[in-house]
Every structure is written in C-alpha cells, then in structure tokens.
Image (cartoon, rainbow, N blue to C red):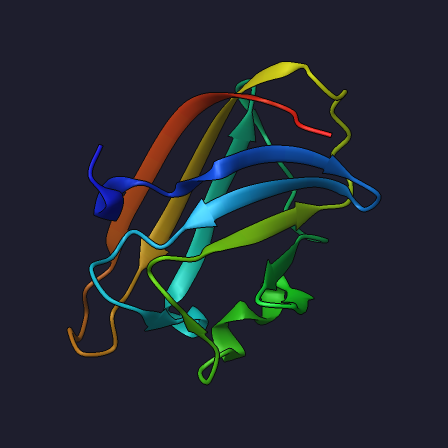
Length: 127
C-alpha cells in the first residue's frame, strides 16, 4: 500500500489511561491543515464507533474531533502520525481487532474535491 493510500499509522492501536488511541496517517502527498481532514467513520470488529467524545492528539496538542474543522493553522506533516483518542472504547491489551478507518481529505487548493480514503487492517492492542 502506498503511503498516500494509508490512513492507519504504523503505531496501530494502544490502550491508554484515556481509553484507546489509534494512529492515523495523512493520505496525501503533502502536508495539509487539520481543518481539511475529516474522520468520516471508524469501525472496530464491524461495529461503528461513536466519535462524539473523540479527541485528536498531535505534536503535544490535543483537541476535540468536533473542532478539527477549525484547526486551519495546525498542519499535519506527511511523515507524522496523529492519534485518534477514543475515551469510550475499551479494548483489552494484546487482543486483536479488525479496524476500518475512513478519512476524507479536501485539499484547499482543489475546490470541491473530497477524496475518500478507507483502510481496514487487523491490529493488536499494545500497552
């Protein structure tokens, strides 16, 4: 899979004090502001995950996923992972799960474009 086709980061899934963290990658060939990236959907083991309390973590910052569209001055660099923090999701350490993540990317320099970027992978929950 080419880097611009991947949305699940190499770090995968990890249990944390705040639920579960999922590594995400920017599926584009250059850095973009977070405001143009939308987490369209997330499923774990075929079940939709409620994203209403989800957070984004990136470069020492954290913000509610619902505010991602306002992050016009925070750029996601193509070589970095960001993390989707899911406080309401609890998964046992070392368990395996099928994760399906779909991101939409709407580059600001291509008016009207909304690129769909799905990826499904089986991930083991790290500590």
